[in-house]
Image (cartoon, rainbow, N blue to C red):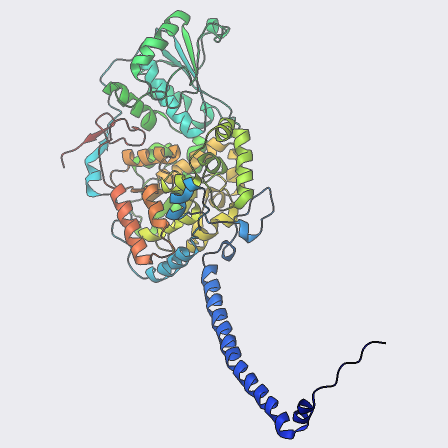
Length: 586
């Protein structure tokens, strides 16, 4: 049997049986309970206060959290959890830490977009900034004059120049003008240019589908000889076998005329024909003889006229944008030919409405090539890398072999295209009212309707060629991206104001130059300095709207200043130079 527990000592038994002694522990226990209640209450209050602050912080952070705005939805994959979706704009801290491999906080634009919405609502009753639809006064001192000639036509007796231009309509246009200039330099006859089929643009259009062939040949007959095809006796030549094929690797970018005289002329004299494959940017802007520079301007601004079906539909676009009584101008006459709307002396100018054209260069090819990040998480990165492997394989291989600059660094240097939500902040800060009629040029925006949500919400009077034209009017141009781009070119060139989001875009550059050449100082172009704009946008979590507005306006005002073409810059983009335009004294 187990041993029994010893009995308690007698004094303890006596104390336990006393009533007074029994009350003492109970009093102590009550005091102990009261003592615990105080810190417990303080703890509860502390928890409530902490919870209150945490909730406030959480609600504030929602303003800058990706899940608080429409997600950037990709076409191929379902959206990931909000935690994987980041901002389209990086902070300066991220730029500084990019080399250290740190993952820094990303700042959303939601707060600035909300401020922009309030500012636009308040500004609707106030007058617009005076210079919003105007160029500086000294822009009127320049007038077009590249159509003037002081030489005899080239005989073209040294042989034939052929080109197969690559890229879209913009690269093709530059290639055509350079080919005309080289033909004059080498005393060669130009064969009407051909266009290569691109797996990016997916357009089979040829020269005659976009430009008037007979007008082109006739207008330039005082400069060079142009034929539609090679002579029959040369058509059977194996140009590759005889060394007459010249590609982009054979001629450096922006090569000087002397290179063509030294390297290309001997081939031309020996074989009677040279075929350039590519050729977009293969002729320098300086140094080059002034008469050849003028010929290049003459080709771009005078010789290249769109075919009638593009002119006619372009006229419909401009008429619907400007109103049925919009006035004619040298620019419209050149762009639209016989379809240009002639001024009605009885028309009331107030019947015509102003419109802003915006070129959003945010198609998938631009986004993929930029190597920038736009907030779509791993889905975006995977999709863009897959696109690069198909369309830019050299870039994909370069990424594997070389450590390229980070997306954050590229953005801080202004190398990334502006996303639509960044572009709309710029427009709102400049002073365009919410009711402004806006024409959006460009192909399908990467990210679709979700990506366009911010600009559509702040500027509801937003249209495209697809919304302005009926299906039957648009049908002849479907599946022809270059012809659709020609319609955009017309609408942008004829706009009362034109805003580009990527100053490096060749489309925007050509439109800007066209407006300078024919605008008479009345057609302003808004071209942001993306590096400086990025430094402003990066402060969006703290900057107030007035400060943001002032800084953006100052930035844009500086880019609208009128200067003569800088040395070595494109005459297609900067035609204000003696070779293209003449300066008046008053």
